[in-house]
Length: 478
Image 1 (cartoon, rainbow, N blue to C red):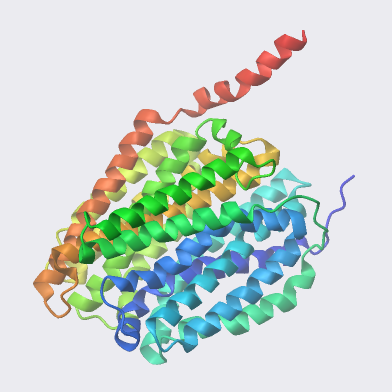
Image 2 (image 1 turned 90 degrees about the horizontal axis):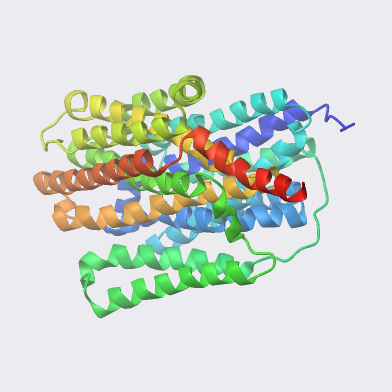
């Protein structure tokens, strides 16, 4: 009989708080971006690195974080992640130049990449004894993500408006220390023997970073320039090297055989395009509110609360019920198409627009689309994986979302800059640039929705495909 941890629900609070903070780290910077730009000297195109430095490190190293958690022990890696996140927060808060800020954000991303997979491992260890308890724990843990996103938008505005932008990073220091003190509640288990694919992790992270850098610089140096071509070629070579390494190693970060799981590929493609559409929308909407409508940091954060509030309500209370009725394929496809409609509506923003007319209704439609698609895509990616590969499937789908976010933001920043978004103070030019970004984000979401509806297998078909190898084995033994 499995031993039940009597402090498991207290431990869940620690893990949910970690999830809350990791997600908040991606949303809390949004409303602070214009102030950071002024103080640190970021250009309009370079400003995205405040976000992308975190996302690239986080997404690129998630699989490595999961592997280290398995080999060295989940609680040890969880604690290490918090130490790294605290260190990165201190660097980001103390930064006096743009490049130091980017370094601090990247270090924060490394910490998040250690925290997120180890927290999931610890949760499974605490509640795997009872499927009902596990379901409740997963629901509470999952709710921490939209809650963190909502809190980040609000707190970012509060800190930036009434204190200063470094406080959006300083807040992680006392919270991190308190979390480290509370990790005694978490189960301490040893790791196991195995190899660590450091080369694979380095290749995929470097390839992603180089691709984003090339896309960011392309509007300035030219898309057809030798520098851009060489950088994109180098990025492709590094990503190809990653797949070669995964195919040849005995213990890779990502065994390629997992891609035979039904719906894993289509669900991850949907997540990539979802991130590529949603994150640029959130980024440019923040800039439109402050740089065109003239909102302060607090007002900008408050203006985004209806959108993030709708996300939280739907993700925690409604989406699961709808998915049970309509299935993942219909939810993901329709969600991406609704997101595309909201983005297309946002593209009609005006230099003399208003929050009520230009932002509120369109942002709520976009948020509805995101809330319909995100959790079903996560569940579709993991549902067909065998139990021993569930953690890997979870890591892959989180990684593809982060990769899509980074590449989408880089590409649409290039689009926006080419259409006038780099001309600070020129409201018509800024609006034209932001509008172009919203149009292309809508196109990305629409393509994702159509591909999902055309390509993804239904639940019944996927279950039959998953069961076929088992039936074949049974016949062979007979």
